[in-house]
Image (cartoon, rainbow, N blue to C red; front, side):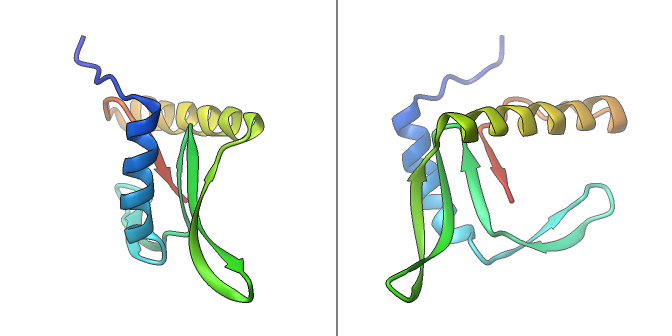
Length: 100
């Protein structure tokens, strides 16, 4: 069917390693208008990667998602996919992470 199977442990490892490199980086958002934005979090259904104050210092940390965060992730993902598909006629394929 063209879908890729992604296991939770692999997703956490990928989001952790890739997400740490994306925090505070500039990316382009709001396709097709392409506005600059700073990444403050990388989210998956399993974990979030974000900068946090740890002992008075800013550090990038990986946190497991709570059930409410998982629900919010699925809702945001569905809204994003629907916007792309029905507003812009773009099929983006499977999405496993979101940038915030």
